[in-house]
Image (cartoon, rainbow, N blue to C red; front, side, top):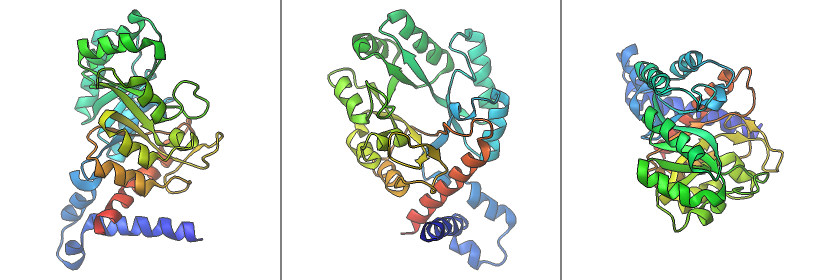
Length: 290
C-alpha cells in the first residue's frame, strides 16, 4: 500500500505543479492556459526525453510517429527496424523528413553492433551522417577502438557505447566502458542503460555523475529486480530509484537524449510507455516544488 500511495502522490503533485498554483487559484483561467502548462516546453525541464525506437520494434515508422505524437515526445533514437542500416541515402533522407514534418528529431541511432572492421564501422557512420544524427549508440568490439577513434575524428559524430548488464562480457557496466575509452578521443563515450547498470550492481545515479564527461545517450526505464533476470517494468512500479537518476541528470545539466526503452511488451508497448511518461513528468514536477 505504501508504494501505491507514493506513486499516487507523485502523480498528484506532478499534476498540481504542471498546472501551477496561480492557475488553480484563478477561477477565470482558460482551458487553453491550462493546456499550455500541461504540454509546455518546460514539462521536461530541459531534458530531451524521447523514445528508443526498439520499444516500438513491431510497429512501422509511421505508426511509431503516431504513437510519439500521442505521447507528445519530440526526440527519437532510431533502431534499424524503422530504418535499415542497408537503406539508401535517399531512403534515409526521406525518413528524416518524415520525422521532421511530425515535429520529431532523431538524436541518435542504435544500438548497432560493430565489428573490428573499418568497412563495417564506416557503414554505421555513413548512416548517421546521412540522417544528420549527432550520435551512434553502439556495441563495438573492444579491439576496434583505434578504428573508432579514427571515425569520430573524420565524421565528428559521437559514439555512445551501450552497457548491457551482467550477461555482457565486454561492457556490463558504464565503468567498463570508461576503462576502454580512456585515452581515446573524447567523442567516444557511452550510453548508460539505467536498468542494465543496476543489474550489474552499479548505482545508475552515481554512474551518471562519474561518467558525465562522456555521457552521450541514456536509456531510461524501471526494472522489477536488480538480479540478472530483472525485467523492464513501468516507471514507479519497480525497484530503481528514479528520482535520484533524474536528479543526477539535472545536476550535470545533461544535454543529450534520454530514451525511454522497453524490452518487454513488444506487441503492445504504448500503454506502458504512456504510464512511464506520465510518472516521469510527475517526478520532475514534484522535485521542482521542493
